[in-house]
Length: 281
Image 1 (tube, rainbow, N blue to C red):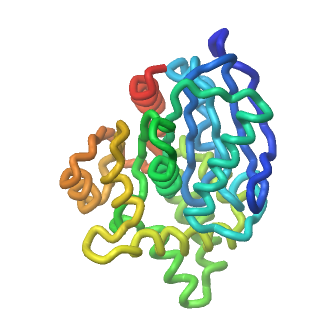
Image 2: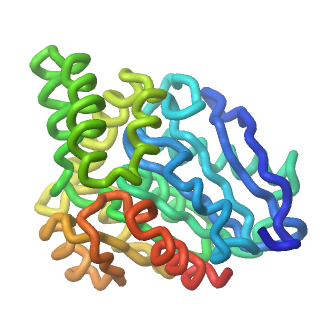
C-alpha cells in the first residue's frame, strides 16, 4: 500500500431501500477511484486482491456487496436499476462522510455485476466516469447457463434443491476441483440468501431479453452506445455469440488464456496489471 492510500473501511452504507455492506479504501486527497462489482452469488471476496496489488496502490477502492449477497441484507428491489441506484448512493455517502474525492472514476464489473456497471456509466452525467472495464460480463442473452438453470429450477418448483446442488456439487466438488483458487465463490454462496440469488436471476433474465431482435440485452445496447473508454476482458469459455456482439460494435477486448470465469482469481497479476494500465494508476 502506498503512502497515499488511506485506511481500509468495512461499513454498512444506507441506500434508498436497504443498507449495503462496503469494503473501501479511501486515498488521501484527490485520486482515481475504482468501483469493483461482483457477480451472481458472489461477494466482495472476489476482489480481495485489489487491496494488495501494487497496480491499484494509488487508487481509492470501493467494493460493495450486492443486495442479499455477502454482508448486505435483503432488499425490496433486486432489479438491475435498483442495484445501479445503490452504487450511486454508496458513492455519495462515501464522498459526504469519508472524504472520497475521485479525480477520475472507473467502474469494473464482473459477470452479472457488469449490468449495473454499464447502467451507472449510461446514466452518469457527462464527464463523471473516466472508463469501464467488464470481465466476462452479461451483455448478451447467450452463455448465461447458471441463470437459465436456476430459472428452470424455479419453474419446476425445485429451486431450493437445485441451489443446494449447485453450491455443494457444481461449485464445491466440480468447479473447485478444477480451480481450487476460487474458494471465495463457494464461501460467498454460503452467505448469499437464496431468495436474493433467485430474484437477481429473474432481474438478469428480464434485462437480457428486454429488447427485440438478436441482441436483446438492454445492458449490451447501453454498452455499445457508451462513448467513454471501455474494455471487455474474457477467457476461453466466453460465448462465441458474445464475442460476435463485441466485434460487431467495435468494443475493445482483452483475451485471457484461461477457462476460469473468475479472471481475477485465475490470473490476478495479469488482471490487475490490466486494470492499473487502464485506470492510469
